[in-house]
Length: 334
Image 1 (cartoon, rainbow, N blue to C red):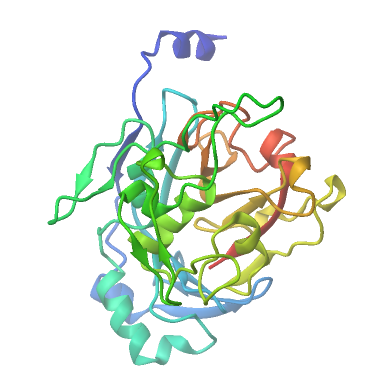
Image 2: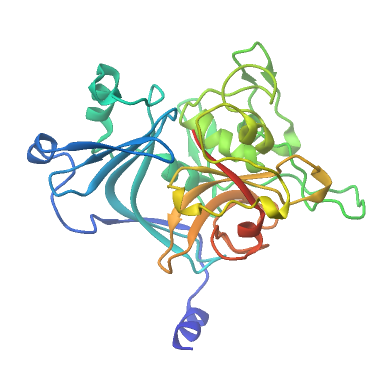
């Protein structure tokens, strides 16, 4: 009761990303002593390599077939007080490696060079980039004056008035947000629509964060080229990365149970709309556990008009029996 009353007294605000420092107050993961006594081990389901420091604590996780690595760094707290009471404090930093991981890669030069650069880096990672598009996020511009980050919409309002129609239109990709044509490697060019300016649908948000910003290769569609496909369904069914929760079907009985295998940075895929038949129709990024022990994800949604960890239209939890938990169907580590 006291907690509820205190929450009522909290003034609503914009999303806040706050670095609260290293939780244990200990030495950094990159100290000479720590690196000298680092140990490697292998785990299965999925197959992965784990780096531990001299204190036995996990310093990094690298999954076979995936380019996204989870590194341990200073703690950060991600909050969105305007739309949820959830607060995720995490020491996980998710970064893109230049090559997919494989057993023994810790001995290869490409990895040792990459790890030396990023093991203790405070450069924006996957999560920091993702939160640059939530409600209230300040605009960021590049040297050419192009706004590449800032509060994003989901898409333009659906004005057709069709019964049962969506509130907002989908199909807003990262180049719509930027307002710039984007030449894909297969020769196709993404052409922005002015009505979709500053908009990212669920898969467009993933492509902005992982592709345009983090430089994971992008496909122009679900069928052309190699890299990250255009839609949530294309991403879920592609050969990219490693399947953490394999897709077995799209029905209610196909909800995966082993969500404890998920780790920060994983893509999670949902079946929300019966109208899409066999197609999966929503995708998000696992953020981590909130202070109440719930596994939280971030995605772009029409109900709140943009990227969010908010609870409007359904709580952002992957555990329990909420809207998104019940509609989860698969997960992938890119």
